[in-house]
Image 1: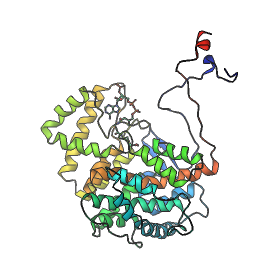
Image 2: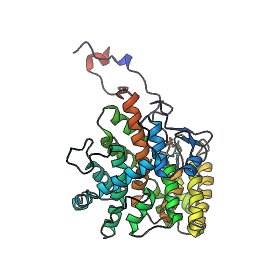
Image 3: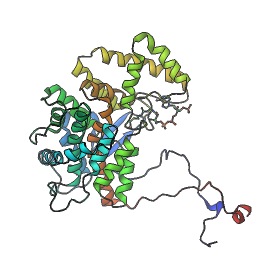
Image 4: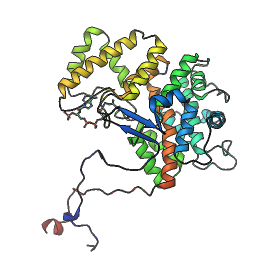
Length: 383
Ligand code: CMC
């Protein structure tokens, strides 16, 4: 046996299986204050970032905060993103013919994998940086995948349009109203970055190996897809549908909670109070729909769910997370539920790529240790 083996008694212990409260990086990108219900993104309160910028401006602010030089302006990002959408449209025939996915999000995962970390000199998108290629491709691919599910052919991007507006146009083959484009913009800006969440951490781990921006984005999307992270909105809508009517709210919640189910759209690892992003979306969907019946019903379910969760889990501070009103808002925009996680990714790619830049600039290879709890060779176990 090698003399370098770590002995049982030297194995460090891990404090929590979810790395709670472990600080994994220094970042200038965003800060989540879970006690105050506050989110700061690129130096702005999230509510102010939504008022100050379209999605292109929020992405520019994040990349600038990440140290990208020269710092891009909102107009430069808009122009490059339009070109990136056009270039991404060239991948659509191959993506749609591959049929190697079951859902829109799995399709997006395949589609983003088609992009090269470093494109060769013959590629149509070779002069567009990877962070912008990924952002443009996510919108074009999501729209085309949604249409393909409905048996419709893809709609080409319009490079001159704003990103949110163009996505909705590619999705529906008609120009959205200003209110709809504004609501989607508010969504994309609000979720563009959010501290060291699971997908962002994944992106940083991959970036720390210098694997490249596209690889980091694909890995991050894989982490985002899970229902405990970005996959919750679809199940939120399933829950509202299953409850069906007012009379069933109480009995349904009681049965689910008693059976040990997790209610989607509630609870958060960091927020101990209401997620501030839930309020941005609640406001946006109220303006968009004039507070229609679906929104009123969602509010009633929310109130009852919070009451039931607080009664069932008195030791935990469980509140509404942003996925709850994401679901209602994106549904009001006509985005099918199996595409909601892809639309989340369309926004979060701005944050992931900013974290990749920051990690590549200041970070070291991320290589933690584990605490070995398995069997030891017999001679050491006896020692
Ligand atoms: N419904 C029922 N019980 C819950 C819920 C919920 N939504 N959230 C937490 N709990 C309970 C959980 O069962 C546990 O109870 P007990 O100690 O009796 O076993 C206790 O609260 C603590 O849960 P935890 O899993 O240790 O807490 P966490 O910090 O790991 O949970 C969470 C965070 C988001 C995974 C969890 O709240 C959850 O599963 N929520 C539902 C899924 C969801 O809405 N996901 C979207 C998250 S927000 C988007 C994002 O930022 O990624």
